Amino acid sequence: MKKVLVSACLLGENCKYNGKNNKCEKVIALREKGVEFVAICPECFGGLKIPREPSEIKNGRVYSKSGEDVTEKFVSGAEKSLYIAEECFCDTAILKARSPSCGFGEIYDGSFSSSLVRGNGITAQLLYENGIRIYTEETADELYDEL
Image (cartoon, rainbow, N blue to C red; front, top):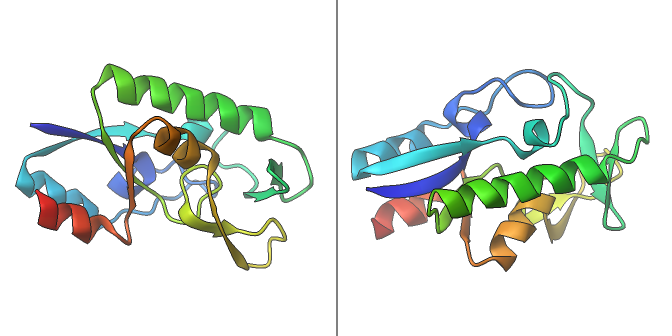
């Protein structure tokens, strides 16, 4: 059985910054293909509470909407997520698109205006640098087709 690291919010866990989730049925449907999920929430792993202020990346640092630099918490959560991926032999991850932790390919620009820029979240970048294939809920169909 293939183990895949997955953002817990995509599985319906209420760990999103606002205390809600991003449940995604097309991600959950991968269970039909024999995928075992290893759920992670890097922001929770880094010690951020639920709910919490939204955060965005600007100039390589992560800031909450009120301006607090929370970069170290995001880095800590990313390192714990990588550790779990390695311990569980996950070579693939499905992460929440555009998140400052999990976004892959594009993220919010740090202005809290819903503007996007090319880039990766802190966890997505670390996993990618360590050879883990990254998908988001928006590209999970590609993984479904490959299995």
